[in-house]
Length: 368
Image 1 (cartoon, rainbow, N blue to C red):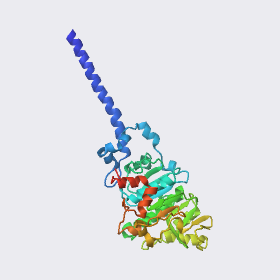
Image 2: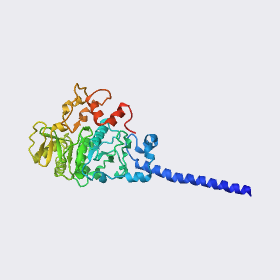
Image 3: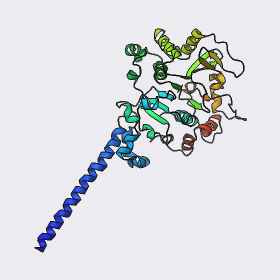
Image 4: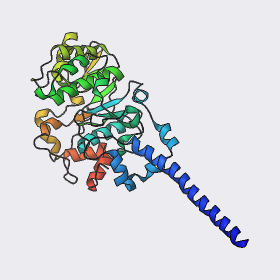
């Protein structure tokens, strides 16, 4: 009788052990599989799902979240940009490891505009809906992952171009026959994004230093010439619509800038006479503020190497809202910020993107 009782107890304990393992598998693995799904389908050298498994220790805090915590943090693109106050960056190639300058630009904007969403659209984030990235896929970029106002979303071009003049043009174009396809695609995407959501668009080689106090503005590169590297407008502003129409009607993919700075300049000239500037004052063109070249281009493209030089006296850029570092001019030499070099660009990194600078200084990877 005693042996039978002991056998029953043994069977009961064995059953409880198996059952507890089954419950653990359901709760833990289900939670982990949700995390893996959330970060999958990212194209590039490594996917985010791979990094979850290969570098789990680096983002251990992510696995501590419950499914409910994660779901409560999901925000759609419409939720984030509904105030027409977003700061927008884009990457129209499939690159998933942007240059340090890109991360510096994003970090600096997030610090200068702490109460505004900073959204980085990446074409390389394929095969997933925007809702999958509302919980900040930016954990892939540790130097900016702790900043609550930065978001990363896929650049879904077909969806973006709906209800704009670009959709028909985009479906007909053959990128293989285009000389400047990436540039022209970027020029169109920035217009469509500001048309739909409003806010400020910035190139990814612009380091922000203080807020732009205007809502509807274009920025002069030269006294009578506009850039399109930075601009801000409310959603569905007539100027942006006119630019989109002109872009399509006068498209010529063999001419660099025709759909970019030259586009902005010729549409502005349809509205007003661009007369230049008196000193550091801004001017107006209809209901648009036309910002002085000092606001973003105190160092012109011909002097771009000055950013990578050592200065006896560092400029204050007191008349500037941000600085354009002309990365396109740097495409062949590929100069970078070198910690300890005492260059102007090092000073800018220290001042405006300290997290990115610190990681580079410690020789840490800026990607997971």
